[in-house]
Length: 263
Length: 357
Image (tube, rainbow over all chains, first blue to last red; front, side, top):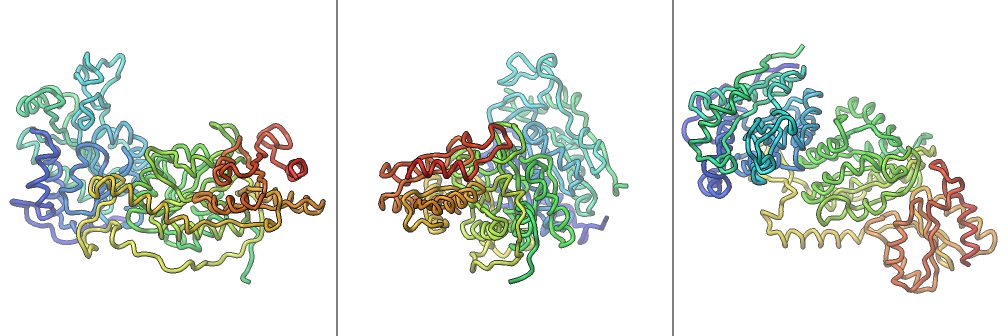
């Protein structure tokens, strides 16, 4: 059953998004995120996308466990967070009870494709009509920079001190490509925020993902590559260059699936 | 009296949930409780209610969390191995103070042994098996009708205390066939969920709500723990048990679930032989009727705990008597045959009664 998104599409958001909890962005943000962290930008893009689609009054959000979960306070939606990796399960129940709701999760790479891989695959298999935004910083940032499924080959982390060795530790997990293989998925894309052009493209990806949910078509997914300067042991500027040189070649950007209805 | 149907315990769980107005059921197949998810898969869609088969028990308990967080009545069910997988979720539900119902149809353990009945999850159910310090409220039925009624009570108590409630059964209680009268029970008014439940942004009448097991961060951690402790203390007003011939009993049997049915027969047989035995059947396993057991101990009664495990509830009875009465145990090793198929028979219990009186 496909249906058009309700409400007229609004103008591009200029200035502070209406869906921000202003106090959080002006006071608490600085205590929660490291210099050069791009996770707050993901929050901003979500707020802008939802506002521009005019679906803010239907939205409710679910956080994973990790740095991304601090966004819980920053967006003006009711929010919950449960066990590590369980966000797609929680979102599933909410969406089934409130099919008109715009239910989305924000999860990290470890949350989404390591400990929560079963929850992700379950939601994909069932074609839950939710949106999953996965923030990929190629390591477990909150816990101090351990190796994640998304850690790139050769990357030094606190649990791969010699660099990720594929003979022992395997190769990075490509979430957006994996998600795109499921028939119940309407949209899957990977964006980054390391240049202005990519920031704008990622905004488009996130907007399209929410558009698909508003239309009632399948599960929509966006993976966003973000910098994690302290755990990468780089300056913020060096981190952006490293994304361009090392991360993008491993994790190509773009849309991997985009359909307006599922046969 | 309304119409009665002849039905097994597992299906009575389903009818009880429907009578309670359950909105969502989350399923993962595991024996010996598969009749429960099959019931809901059949009955929920035609009522416009939610049935989801998850990818695992970590999935069902996560979904339960999501449904409870938006304030609808939700439940899941499982058996012992699945219960193990749910423990992190149980801790989260308790930590976030979410009302919901979990039915556990116990089977033999430890680990994946077989699909037969046992009562080996008493400790993890009554003490909490997940991380942190929390309590589940636990109710134990011992007939098909009581199963149906207790599931409704479980929903009521979950909403009243904003806490998960576990209905503890065993494979025999799940598969026993008895007559059932399906009826909605009224337990009285309940507090509104509107001051905490999650809503779509356009449905909000007050500010943003956050449901999280890490509530202590906002509320002050020690205050949060004190509030939890006070809530657990207040649950003691819900203690329920059934006494069978205990007023003049010299020996009080303590048992729940199928073992309580066995003990009832054993008490009848003992009384026929002139032995003053009685049965105290806890209906709430947590909070446990310590005081009532202590009172019987003060009257000079001895105790015989009958449970189909190596001995778990017996520790609660010992705590209840506070060393003032002799406590004996008929455990799983007293089964009539030494296999998973065996069960504790009334005759074996009568032998112990004779030995003790």
